[in-house]
Image 1 (cartoon, rainbow, N blue to C red):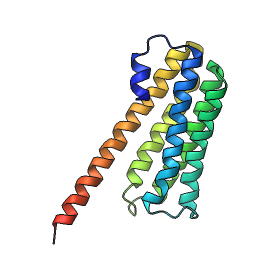
Image 2: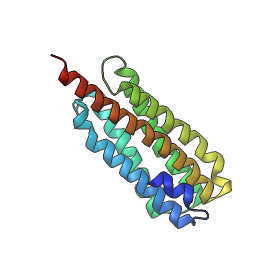
Image 3: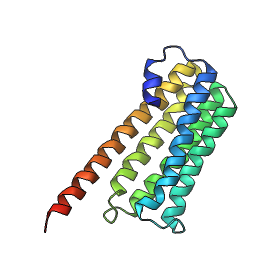
Image 4: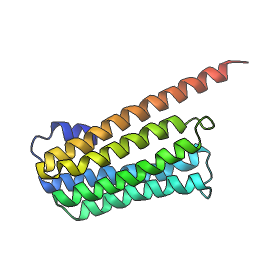
Length: 164
């Protein structure tokens, strides 16, 4: 949804950018926090703590961006939130590579988050539309990744259940 808004909104104001981007970051962070138990990783383990901090970083950045509106603030705070979350997802994926079904997805998602975070500061001077475009592009790529991941997991689970 957020990605579509960034594509089709031709001239968003700074306030729209703050609300749309902030709600996206907040939702992504909360969903990350709520999904940890479903991964089978204990929340008190090192990986659980990394994923918890990743979710909290994105959610915290979202709250700040919702409350305070400016191009500079959005570029810096959103980059920090996405960057921290991306580094932690990447680290968790690398730690569990070959041992957890979501490791490859965490690696890819982490790289996308880091890439988005690196690009955001370069677009601060171009205004709200450019910043939303970069953040929305990362959201679209991440969204496609996670939808494909979910469909793959569902298909693999169904195929495994059929085998005797």
